[in-house]
Amino acid sequence: MIGAMHRMRLEKERGARMLLEGKKAIITGGTRGIGYAIAARFIEEGAAVTVFGSRQETADKAVEQLLAVYPEAKVWGRTCDLASLDAVTEAFKAAAEDMGGVDTIVNNAGISQSTPLLDYTAEEWQKVMDLNVTAVFNGCRAGAQLMTEAGHGGTITITSSMVSKYGQPSGCGYPTSKYAVNGLTQSLSRELAPKGIRVNAVAPGITKTDMVAALPEKMIAPLIATIPLGRIGEPEDVANAFVYLASDMSSYVTGAVIPVDGAARC
Image (cartoon, rainbow, N blue to C red):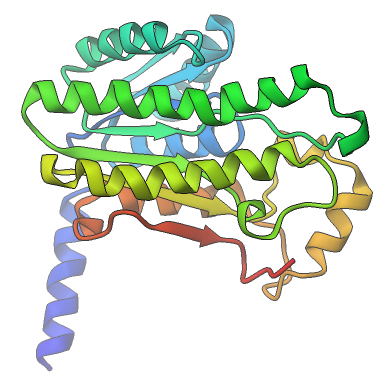
């Protein structure tokens, strides 16, 4: 009986208060796919959001689309060179000024690669590392600096991938970069915990995004066959994990790399 009453009270409180009410979030790679779904779910849960895109026009378009669905949303669009620490620091500071602060950083921007090893060029390798690793480090540093200077904690959540654990048949740069992201997540979770900043990662499996659509069918089909839930993940499935990690519901969770993959085992 007590348990039932407790659940009813929680449901009542949940109806009156959104999970991210009053939160202020920066989301890189927030103009499409998983990043856009994260932005939409954050807005639904009451957060103010700044989405970063590869170009200002793509960021502006995403803002326009979000406002069409959520007319009352507090949402901004920005762009910068994510591989430049100075550029990210300046842009994140400006975004925080727009929103009146920042509570959570989502480092989602990234690129995939499927080039075979013997065709891989040094330039391709560096491009993957610049956006998937260096840009993530820059976002973590700039975000942690803003939170520390403001005198409060917050959350940093990074998009990893299940290929960081299982690899992929071709394109070694991408899983390598995501393995690095996992190490960064676990190290920063320990370093930043005394400051009240929680650092986690979400590792999607195969998900319906433009990035996946660009992969060869011969890479996708065997992966689908390994998913016990019998379907490809939706961007919203992944976004829900980000909502949880940015919310107070995960107040004792840090250093985690959470799989969202339908129990797939490649």
